[in-house]
Amino acid sequence: MSLIHLFRKCNQRCVFCSYPEEGGADESVSLKGWLKEIAAMPPGLVQVSGGEPLLAPAAELCALLAAVKKLGRQAELQTNAIAAAGMRAENLNKIVKALNAASGYFNVNFPASTAALDLKITKVRGAYKKRLAGVTRLIKAGARVRLTHVISSLNYRELPEFAAFAVKKLKGVSWTQFSYIKGIGRADGPLFLPGYAEVRPYLEKALFVCEKNGLHCEVDHIPPCFLGGFYRLNVDMVKMRDGVKGPHLEEKAHVPACRGCRFHELCPGPRKDYIAVHGTL
Image 1 (tube, rainbow, N blue to C red):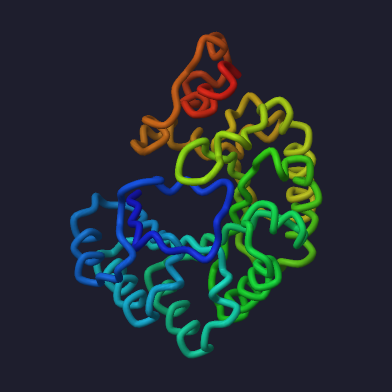
Image 2 (cartoon, rainbow, N blue to C red):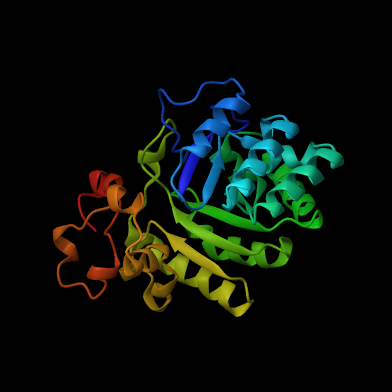
């Protein structure tokens, strides 16, 4: 798996943004630079991120996705879907077609099931309505769409409601990932990290709603020991079992509380930034 940041510009200012506060890509669009970076990446999934990649010119974005396809790799386009709501149909369809050709999917960050909570998290008025419209357009255009719901202290009590919302209002999404907030980056992440134990009962209820209604889901950045009977939904367990290398081996580590846990060999441990805030599990 490889990650490419196209640029820093974004149309939201989310409290959970994990993009580096300083350094990284600049605001310019450089198709030549993007293609060179992708060609040098190791095999595996190519995650196309930003900022917000749908703010890039459609032609350049399609050319990048075509390059991923030519390399025989799969693409994941990470977006908040706001730009998709107002994009010209011609450009939207071209991007969907190029992503589908690369066996890819849109990874849409959908942080809340209500406009009021969305505003608290993204700090952008009107984002919720546009995001909902954007996802609907992507699905109607034939795109595969995964929802990523970042869990923070602002929304963890509303997890069951979000699951019900996704089932009812976002029909056609391929799957949903509940991903615990990272305490890194240029936003306010470290201020919004709830304890795993606090999150657990709400998350279990949300996962039950998804299971009951046939919405496939997975969980990232929360150890399987906090998922109850849904522990198999932890995305790191398969990676650890198969010996897959990746960020999970660098971002996470076992702590004394992990000793004796039945998941010890299949779990890389909690995120290091979580431990920096909470001290232990």
